[in-house]
Length: 115
Length: 115
Image (cartoon, rainbow over all chains, first blue to last red; front, side):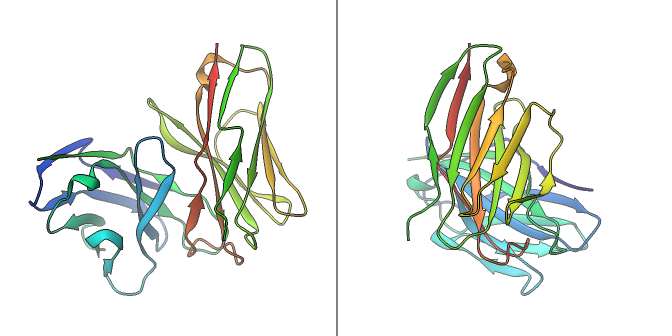
């Protein structure tokens, strides 16, 4: 079984300050981990993915995440928030066994960026 | 390359009716997955189709069904609609191998409202 817990349902930052969105996962197997973003009335867009290569993963729009197996965490960070980053973010885990696609989503974190 | 398309974008039905939603994957993608998004339950996996066969299934009642055609287009059907079926239904496709390593590309979704 696999599960994902996003530790904060809402995060509010000021423009230009760092962003930290926290995610813990549970998986019986070596997981693939993803962060997706969903802007209002739009579909989900992949920010970055971890598939057992480098533990520090760089994504689009300046986001990055670090896979820490000992802490079962995959936190998303960005050095400086931009107004356009305001959206809902989902941490996602997938079984890493080539048996197909079955994503398990965290509950989401709504990021608000204040001017 | 065109993205994942879903039709219709919005749908209003009444309790007891049935509904069919359609998804056209990115050209060349053979894996199509369906997800339900609600404010209360978040994003939940419904099922995945690969080469016209259901490969994975989530924990939903039998009223939810799907199929995939030889051109990889997929449909999902919900029979005997209930108020709780009101949700955003998202379709995702992934590239040819269809393994969990691959990114899933999401469509804009179909917003179903059950009255």
